[in-house]
Length: 190
Image (cartoon, rainbow, N blue to C red; front, side):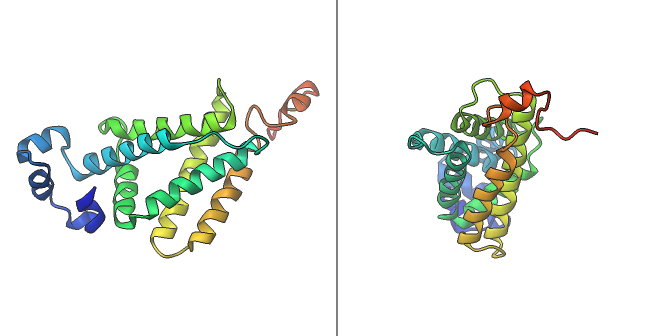
């Protein structure tokens, strides 16, 4: 994390990481065959740490607002080390889930965090899809901020709006039961 915080991804050398960690280069490559593996693992660790630090939302807070606040807090934490955040986002975006196990750990971790904040214990396929779309949107908004194309204020507003727009049709949204009783599911037909 220290090296990744100081140097852009393209300047990080695996032999330097091995030396800093006090392990042989072969040992490093056994566990992390590439920088993509290494920085995806770092991000997965950050997701785990973030999850441990989450406090329950205040009573009466709308689930969409609770998720928005979670993602704003995660963004602020990531942006404290922008060079490292850029490396982690780039590598996790490049990581193939079939070959980089920590990619699934990131996806599953954030999905569980968001579903918990929404109060959804048994998600539908649509719920999982909505969360996945929200995560993809969040990554894009973060990347825009890291690239200097969006201010921190814009980033936070965009995240909150995305939560409201993307999470409105979730399975436990208010009014879903009424629509389902009337034969409408809130889904567009035809």
